[in-house]
Image (cartoon, rainbow, N blue to C red; front, top):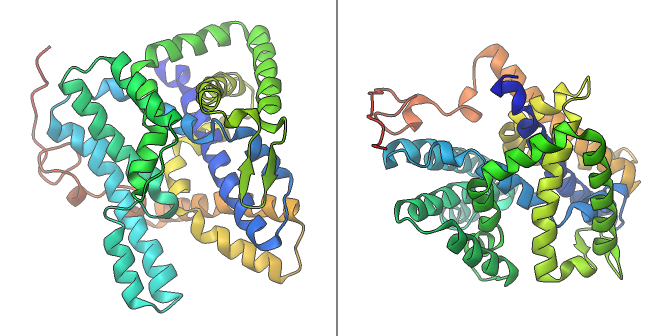
Length: 357
C-alpha cells in the first residue's frame, strides 16, 4: 500500500472536520434568525467536545516532518503560509462586510488594523495555526519535553481561560490538541492501522463511543440553543478534555473505515481542499440564508441543510472556476512573492542545506 493510499484517511478526517465546522456556523446562522433549533443543532451539539480539537490534532500530525528545518524554511511553510491566507481573506471579508455593505470606512480601517492582533471572525483558526506552529518550534528548539508541554497546555485548556485577547483565549483552549497531534502522531497512526485491520471490532468500539458521547453531552440537561450548545456532564472541564481527545481519535478511526467504502473519494477530495472551503464559506452562507428566507423557507432543519450544502459547494465551484480560467489563483494558492526569499516556491529559490542530524 502506498503512502498516498495509506494516509487517505487523514484527508477524509479533514473532510469530516470541515463539514462539521461549516455545519455549526450554518446551523447557528439560521438559528439566529429563525429563533429555533433544527436537526443540525443536535448533530453539532453531539460533536461539540471534539469538533475543533480534532481539526487541530489533524493539523499537527505531520509537523514532525518539518519541525527540524531551519527557521527560514519552517517559517515559510508553517507560519507565513497561514498568515498569508488569513490576512488576504480577513481583508476581503472586512472590506465587503464593513466597508462596502455598511459604508463605514472608519470602522473598516479600524477592523483591518485590529485584525493584525485580534483574530477576525471564523478565520481565527488559520491565524492560530501560525501561532501554534511558532510555539511548537520554540518548544522543540529549546528541548522542552513533550510531557511538560502537554501537561501545561492541558491545564490551560481545562482552566477555560477567557481574556480580552481572543488569540490568548483560543491558544489556551486549543494548543494542547495541536501539540498532541504532533507529539503523539506515531501512536495515532498505529492506532488507526490497528483499527483498520479489525474493522468489526473498530466499528463496535465507535458505536460504544458514540453512545457514551451522546449520553455525556445531552444528560442530564444538555440542550442545543439557536446559536449555542449547553452541554450536560461533558461541560465538566476534565471530562470535556478527555472527550475531546477520544472524539478526535474516534473521528480518525471512523475516517479510515469510511474511506475504504467505494464511492467515498469525494470526502477525501473535500479534505484535501478543506482550506478552500474554510476561507470562503462565510460569504455564500449568509447570502443563501437571506435569499432562502425571502422566498419563504423558514423551517430551521431544512434551511440549515440548504445553507450547509450551499456553503460547501460555493467555494468548491469558485475554486474549480479559478483553476479553469487561470485567474484569481492567489485566493487559494500562495503566489511566489508571498514566499520568503530563498524558500521553495519563492521568486529566487536556492538550495538550503538540511540541518545536521
